[in-house]
Every structure is written in structure tokens, then in C-alpha cells.
Image (tube, rainbow, N blue to C red; front, side, top):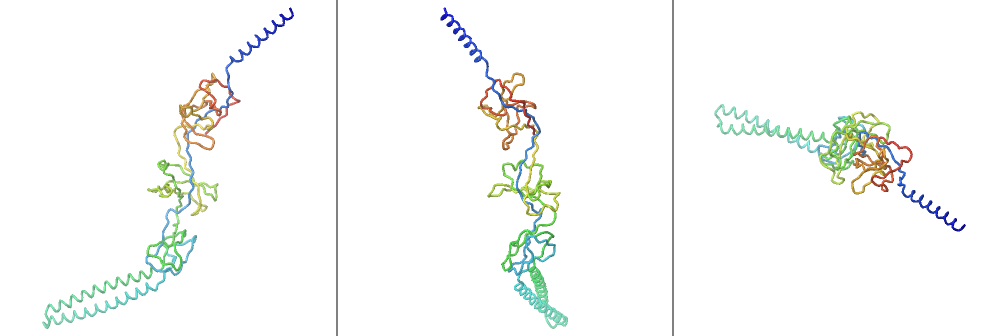
Amino acid sequence: MKTNYLLLIMSALCLLLFGCKETQQAQPVRPVVRTMQVQLAGGSEERTFSGVVIARYEVQESFRVDGRMLKRLVDVGDRVRAGQVLAVLDENDLRLSMESSQAEFNAARSNKEQALTDERRYASLLSQKVISQAEYDLKRLASDEARGRLEKADRSLKLARNRLDYAGLVCSTDGAVTKVNAEAGQVVAAGQSVYSVAKNGELEVQVDIPESIIQDLKKPEGEVTLWSSKDRRYRAVLREIAPSADPATRTYPVRFSLPGADSSARIGMTATLRLSDPKLTPLARIPTSALFNQGKGLGVWAVEPDTGRLSFRPVTVDRYTDREAYVHGMLANGDTIVASGVHKLDEGMAVRLEGASQEVSQ
């Protein structure tokens, strides 16, 4: 009797335990997920480029004649003014050329005086019918030729004097010397750049823009900071886009004017240009761990507020940062999405939220 009683009790316990197990297995699994709330805001794409401060106008000062440079009078960084002599050429050859032109002018002037004297004398003889008209015409033509030779010699003399004056390189504008391209003793050609002089006035920042985004530079908002004083900010206005790209870097030199630049901005300083391009499409900033692709395109898991079940929301990425992405698509303000572990979830799965949702704003 005791044995049967014990068997009956053990059977009842086994049935009870089996029933509990079946009940536990029948309960659906609801994983705990970390979520966040979406907040949409107007997008604003910001790009940064390194550049250098330059003068809007830079003059290449050069001699108007060739010769050996005798001495250089200014250096890089010197302030210069219009009319100041920057360098001097050896004048010996130019002076000899001027003296030769002077001698030709004196000879032409003497020849003209002789020709005029002969013309007057032959005119008197013609009036007395001592000579023929043909003989007088020869003297008149010789007088005209002497006048022409004198005019030519006069112009040659003026040109030689000008060339002698050009032996001194005179600055054409007020500004600062930014580059020296020749040294004393060097033979320079006419028109060869000897100095680069940045003209006083408006400053600019020159940056190199990749060809992939050169079409986006329509009316961007620009801001410039200098490495030497990062707390100061200057408004940048797009002024010029080079018509062709650099053959080596395949980037386009672009210039931005700095209308409000003060004395803190100096030529040659390194600058950082920030371009902000406002976008009309509202964007949501989410962690990159919330994105996934299971063959249906990029998207996120949205948690339905009433049932706690997951639904797929396709999105498009506007841009990435270090650990975040700016997206737009089938999202609304206040939507709750899964922030991590998205590859372990499925459509329609019921989940539990881990703590309170965190808000991420633009």
C-alpha cells in the first residue's frame, strides 16, 4: 500500500512539473532593447576646408627691360608704396644705347639744317632761272628726307632714355612684398616677375574644392576662422571659382572674400573655411548602430507604442559623422526606434524597452 501511494504521489508531481514546463514554453519571448526617440529638424550640411589668406589683388612687379640686376632694395614682408624703387639694373649697356641714340640725333639734326640751307639756296637760284626745276626738286626732297630722319632719331633717343629710366624697378601700388623671385647678380628678362606685391585692400581665403562638390557651391553660407586666433570668426562670401581644375590634385581653386577682416587677419595665415548648406528636408540624427539592411534597403526598427511590436521603416542617409548618421524617410517626431542590436530582431517581434527613451536632437 505504501509503495502504491508513493508511486501515485510521484506521478502527480511529474504531471504538475510537466504542465508548468509546457506553460513556460508557451509564453512568447520578449527581448529587452535599448531605444531612443526621434526628433526631426531642418538639415544643415557643414563642410570644412583648409585654406590660406591672400590679397584679392597681387601685382607681379617686373622690369620693362632685360639686364643684370645690380641690387635689390626690399625683402619679403616689407611694406612698399607706389613710386618706390624696388631694385636696380646695371645701367652700362642702357646708357651706351642712349648715348648712341643721342649721337644719331645730333647727326640727323645737322643733316636737316644742311638740307634746309641747300633748299633755300636752290630756291633762290631757281627764281633767278639759274638752275632747272628738277635740280631744285632734288634738294627739296633731300630736305624732306632729313626732316624724317630727325624725327626718327628723336623718337629713338626718347626710347633709349626711357629704357635707361626703366633700369629702376618702380613699385606700381601700395602694399606688402609677399615673394622675391630674383637676386642681385641675376640676369632677368623683360617682364620676368621679380617681386610679388599684395595690394592693400580686401583680403580673401583661397581653398581647393574637390570636383565632386563643386556644383554645390551656388550660394553657400561661409565662415572663416584663423589658426592663430580661433575665437574670431569672419564672414566669407564666394567670389570666384576657377574655370579649370588643378591637373595634379583635380581640385578647383576657389576664393572667398573677407569683407569684415581686421588687422588680425594677415596674408599667408592658415584659415579654416566652414560651408553650411541648409537643406529643406527634415533630418533625424541617430546612431549608426540603429541602421541595418536585410535585403530591403537601409532602415531602422520602429517600436509601435500600443503593442510594442517592431516594424521596418526605410530611411535614406544624408551624411555620416563619427558615430552618427543624419537620415530622412518614414520617420516622424517622437517615433521610438531601436538604437542597437538591430540584427538580432525580426519584423513583428514584441519587445520590451530598456529604461526611458533618450532624445537625440539635431
